[in-house]
Amino acid sequence: MSTTKKIVIFFIFAAMLFSNHPSAYAATIDEPIIAAAALMLESESGEILYESNSRQRHPAADFARVMTLFLAIYTIETGEADPDALITMTDTAWDGITQRVRTQNISPGEEMTLLDLMYCAFVGSAGEACNMIAEHIAGSVDEFINMMNARARELGASNTHFTNTHGLHSPYQFTTAFDLYIILREAMSFPLFVEIAGTHVYTVEETNLSGVRRLTSTNPMLNANSPYYYRYCLAGMASFTYEGGYSFLAFAEREDLSLISIVLGSDAVVRADQSVLLRNISETQRLFDWGFSEFSWRDILTATELVGRAAVANGAGADFINLRPERPITHLLPTSVSADEFVRTITIFSNETDGPVYAPIYAGQVLGEINLSRRGVDYGTVRLIANTSIELHRFDFFRMQITSILSNSITRTIIAILAMLVLGYVALVIRYNRIRRTRLRKIAEAKRKLIEERMDSDMHTMQENHEHSHKD
Image (cartoon, rainbow, N blue to C red; front, side):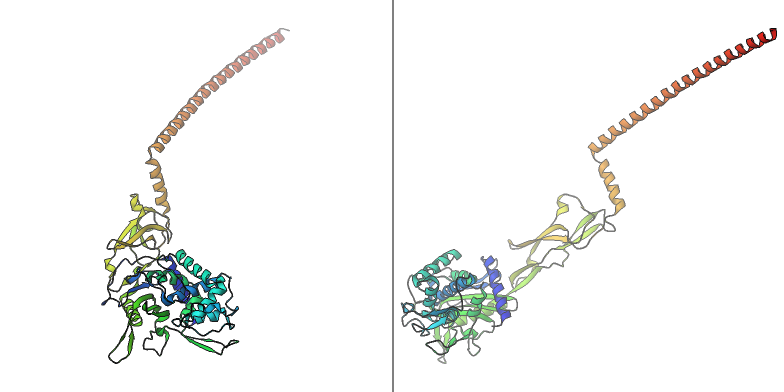
C-alpha cells in the first residue's frame, strides 16, 4: 500500500470517531445479505447504509486479533513499547494454543521484534505471536486479556467480551457487528494499524532459530490473483471457526466514498463446478458494489448559490444585498434522491426586526441563515452572508440621522426646552441691553447738562472780570 493511501485511510477513519448514528434515510438492497449479522457504514460520516442483526451477539473468533493488534499499537504510540524491541519467545506463550489455532511455529527461545510479531499475529494469524505480544506488554496473557476487556468497555463496545488473545472459540468470548465497528474505528485512527491490516504479503527475516517467513493475509480481496480480488479494498480480515462460521470485515474506497463492511456467520457452498463459494467474501463484495452504486456525496447547498436578498438603507447605489451560504452543506445520499426534495427555510435577521440592513455592508457579513430538511429530517443550518460590499451614502445617512433624532419624543421635548431656554436668554439679553442703553443715555444727558452749567458759569465769571477791568 502506498504512503499516500495510508495517510488518506488514516484521516478517513479518524473522522469516524466523531460520528456514530444511524442514517436518516433508507435504501434497500435487492436481496438480504446471507449472514447471521451484517453491517455496512460510510466511514467518514458513520452513516449506517445496511444493517441486519448488527447488535446481536456472535462468536468473536479471529477478530479478537483486532483488539490484540490495536492495544499493541496503542502502547507503541504512547511510548510504552518499542516496535523494534527484540523479544524472546517463551514456553508460556504456547499455553492454550491448540491444533485449532493457526501458528507460525515460533519456537521458545526464538527472538523476534515486536513489529514482526504484530505482522505474524494479524497477517500470519499466529496465535502464539498474539500471546507473546500480550506477555511483553502486560506481563502475562491474563493481564492483557483484562486490558482488552477494559478497553472494549471504554470504547462503548458493551456487548463484547474476550477470553483469549487469538480467537479460539469460547462460549464466553463474543462480540457484535456494531461493537466490531466501534473497536475498528478506534484502531484505524492509527496509521500502523491501517498499514498492517492492508498488507497482503509480509516477509519476516530470518531469526536466531528460523529462516525467512513469508506471511500471507487471510484477506483474499487484497490478492490480485484471487477470484475474490476487489480492487477498491484497502484493508480487512477474514475469520473462520466452526462455531462462528465464515466472517469478514473490510474497508474499501472508491473515489470520494469509503465504506466499512462487517459480515458475521456466513457460510461456504459448493457450486456446480465443484468450486467453493465463500459467502463471507462474496456477500461483502455485494455490499460494497451496492453501496458504491447507490450512494454518493452530494452538495445539497453550494457556497456560491444566491439564495436570498435583504433590503439595504443608506447604501450608495444599492437598495438590496444578495445573500449566499457561508459554506456548502454536503451529505451522503442515495443516488435516487433529488435536490428538489429538500425544504429550504431562510431567515433574514433584518426581517425579524421589520427593518432594513444599514450600510456600510462588507462582503461576508452575516445577515441571516438557511436550514435544509427533508421528510422531517434536519440536514443542517448554515449562516447567510453578504455576497458583495455596499458603501455608505453620506447624504442619506445624515438625513436619516436627523429624521431619526426628530422622530424621538424625548428628543423633541429636549429640543423644545432648549429652544425656550435660548429664547428666554435672548429676551433677557435684549432687556438688559435696552436698560443699559437707557441708563447710558441718562448718564450722557446728565454729563451734557453739567458741562453746559459749567460753561455758563465760566462765561459769567469772564464777563464780571471784564467789567471790573474797564472800571479800573
